Image (cartoon, rainbow, N blue to C red; front, side, top):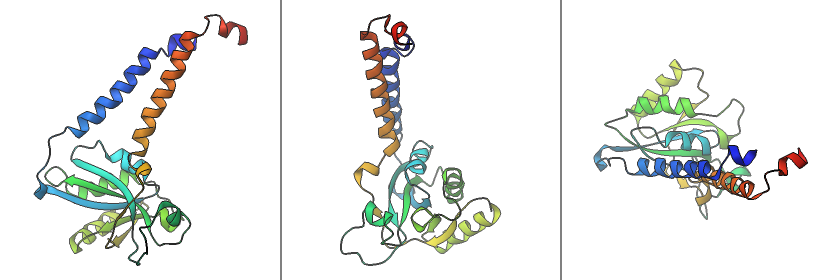
Length: 202
């Protein structure tokens, strides 16, 4: 029986584990402001790359948004405008990291691991390493030259990073919790159904 395999107790454990994991990440030893650096990557759709980087030791935070276009906008760009191609903006991940634990070259390696961009992607989903200095530009160019399988290019960081709408932030983390609650609800409902229900219909 479904209910006997996926008991609501087991599902509750999943939810608790997810919450504890996220709390443990947020309670990690804080870094001093002088060691915190920021980098920006276009890596295809920004949901998965941001999620995959969150729990890497040395990563302080990730957020998703839009950058790569220094045009003047009458109002902050939103997801619909970017999707409709009315801007030159790219879906990007903003990463704050502890430079005492991770070097910029480490960040490039992490980017390569989470990058989902493919050849032929439209501008919105391009693989781009946005650099903020000549040194970063040089390191990024050398990295891509040595790792030709990484679908990306180097581009100077735009003046602005527009943070994406709230529902885009921590997107997959939110969905994991929702799915766990849904499974729990089905499990509880299954436990309340007659034991012979499956025999009648299957």
